Image 1 (cartoon, rainbow, N blue to C red):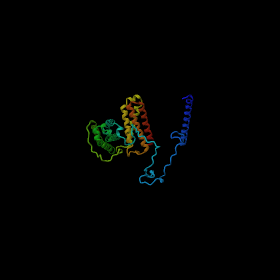
Image 2: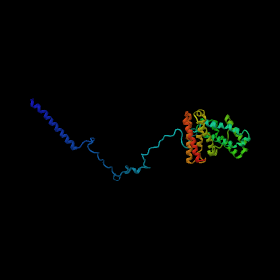
Image 3: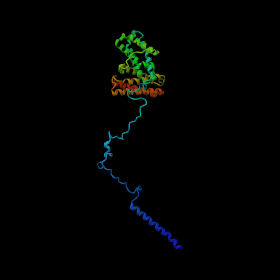
Image 4: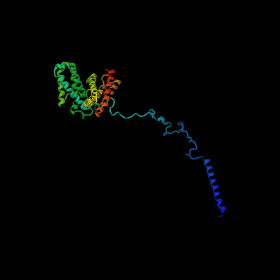
Length: 326
């Protein structure tokens, strides 16, 4: 091969290469760019056929929306939270054990004993304090009513639980006779006090009672008695949280008072008590109950500030309720 032939061969190859590239470009432009390069706009979609243009069929429904049942869901609405309040469940279906402990019920019954023994020590004293005897018997009937309905049997004395309805009705009748018969009921009152004393000592009496008879809490006492007991508990909470020192010296008493407020706040809205179905009244009772449980939690945790604030909230709730209801 001579020098001239070697020099012209690369030039010829370059010319062929250029022609091939031009040919490819012409083919590319004539058939359009492939999908995905993005030079052209989005492909226009064909319209969906209208229901009336669909072929007749026993399987395919022309209008699927015609088969839907019920309202169309609105997915813009946020589902309600299923998180529940762990401190307290609202409403009157609340279990008694969440409000008051078996030990508080036990203490409430036992502390009535010395007061009643003093009232029936003599007939003269009984005659002048018969109203106090009536209140004590009615509160005892309430306590035994709660024990009869208590949901944690292991937290209350088994013998008390077994005979709770009998004692509930026994003390209810004692209060009724004292109210109706006055001084003539001294013997009845004395006997009932003896029954309570025997029970506390462990000597249980079996009283006949009709457990199938309809029962309402309002038959045991009037609302005014519950209010008076609540006032005493509120005063105990106020004095027990007056200072850090009084708080540390009143732990057991504060728990007792807080549970009485929570429990009696529930009783206030039981059927047939005055205003039991009034929505505003129920709101007052619910707040009082919630604050009482906050006091109990704070006391158990040794948190003085939280206990004091919750106790103040109870007093405020009571005042707000008294302003509207008497």
